[in-house]
Image 1 (tube, rainbow, N blue to C red):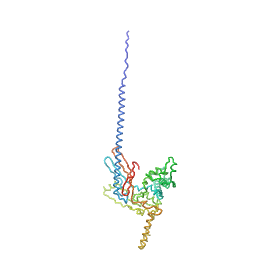
Image 2: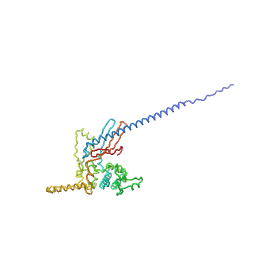
Image 3: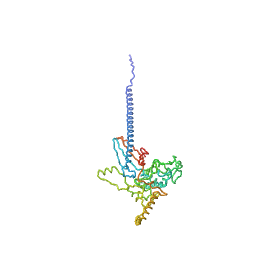
Image 4: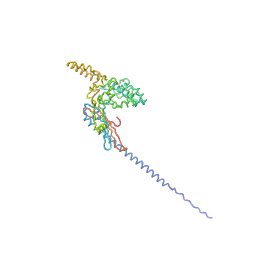
Length: 403
């Protein structure tokens, strides 16, 4: 019996090449997809940078436009009924839109007024104390904030006089500590030690470094405060009513609602009235001098901080004066002029023009530019502090995003 022996060949490893090819293909697809995604991201980033740069240039152009508006403005009297104060203005252009807003910064309280001629101004410290107290009481009475128990508790614990003194200590160059204030030693003993500024503030946000100020209270008072590079008077025509009330020794004395000053004009309202064929003429009073402002009925019977004004004479005295002869009238006119000069520059007070003026020197432009379309819209907000001095305009500070 013959046996036949056969040798079996080894089975070939079938499919390995195919799997390898698939893996290589998948790897190439992944790399290609990553490259395409990265390219798209780079293109989008480059496009955003280009749009942002274009938007910034447009905001600078808007600043130049505001220059031209202010050059045509009456420099003797500034009020919110003038063209520069127009609200709601929109300037569309190809692939974007501009929105300017110009604010009189002397409508706010200038914290740098606390130091004048290298010396602390006690009158201005008292005005700041009054303003902080008015804003604190208003916040406590605000029903929209009543549910915030933490904020309410914080407001009840604030001492406005201590806060005002702390701001004065932060700005003045001496080392004398006012009640509730603080100098270098008080700040260096904290968890994160630092020194006081001992100079003018460059931004009102610097108040967050002053002891006693917290972000919650600063958010409440920030719209009423500014930090200008030199002491400035309030603009009688634009100053916020809370700041006007703070001028009185008694915060409840000045009746700011009696000051019927021009309000801001709104572009949308003007266009709507124009379409209806309606025209509105404002009868609000524009004050051309500090004296005219202080003679308003809002200050009747009030004593202002710094003895800037006294209670006006009543009608009975005016009738008696009319019955006197001409010589007596002349003598009385001379006495009134002397008294007025004393009120404007009293020995223990401030000149009126240091506290109140009918015009302004500093404007802040908030220029908003939106570029792009669809889901690729880039917005830039530029804040420009513009100074007008003897008819000359200059931008003395710029910032983006926040002021």
